[in-house]
Length: 188
Length: 116
Image (cartoon, rainbow over all chains, first blue to last red; front, side, top):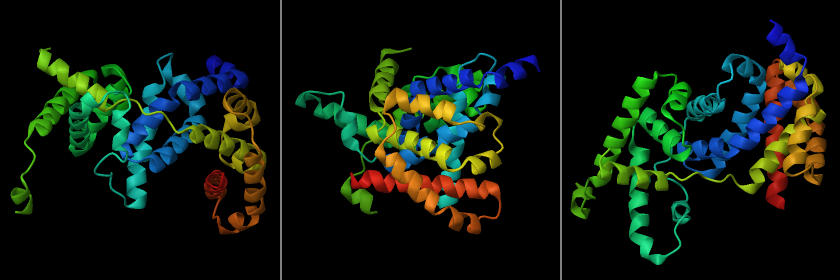
C-alpha cells in the first residue's frame, strides 16, 4: 500500500519512466510488429496501439514488475494486439516480408548477392513456422531477448521456452535446406 | 553448439535484423498523444486512468525530447475537435467515445502527413 501511495504521489517520475521506456523500446516494438505482420503500414498501427495500451497500464505494470525489465510486458501487449488485429479484421499474416531490400541493408558489396538469397529464404521459412515458434525466433534474433524474457512475454516457463526455440531453429533449418520445387512439381 | 548450428544462428540473426521505425512514426504517435491530451480531457477521464489525470505532464517531455509539437498537431486538434459531437452521438458509452476519438486523431494525423 505504501508503495502504491508512493507511485501515485510521484506521477512525474512515472511519466519520466514511461518516456524512457518509449525511447528505449520503440525500435523493439516496431521490429516485432514488422516481422509479425509483414508490412510497414500495419506495423506502424500495431506499434502505436501498443504504446497507448502500455501507458494505460503502466502504473500497474511498474508495481507488478518488481524491478524486472518491462520489455517482455511491452512485447506481450504487441503480441496480444497482433492476435486481435487478425481476428478483428479477418486478416491473415502476409506470406512474406514486404520489403525484401531491407535485408540487403547490412551488406555493401555485390559479392553478397548469394548471401541475400540465403537470407531471403530464411525469412520465407520464418513466415512458414507455427505462430509460437516464429514469435520466439523474432524475440530472440530481432530483439535479442534472452530465454527468461521470451518466457515472460509468451507466458511460458524458461524450460519450455528453451525447447520451443530449439525446435523452431531445427524446423527452420529443415525448411531452408529443402530444395526449391521444380516448375513441373509446382504445377502438380 | 556445433559450428553448423552457430553459422545458421548467425544467418538467422542477419535475416531478422532489427527494423528502424520510419521517422514519421514517432512524430505521428507523439502528435496523436498530444492531440488527445488537448482535445479530450473529459474522454480521457472516462478511460478510468488514474495516471492520466494530467497527461500533459508526460506527453510534453516525450515530444520535447524527440521532435517538438508541430503545426500539424494543431490541425489535428482542430479537425478532430470539430467532429466531437458526431462521435459522441455514435458512441454507446464513454469508452467507445474515447476509442472513436483516438481513431479519428490517428486518421487525421495520417492524412496531414500524407500531404506533406
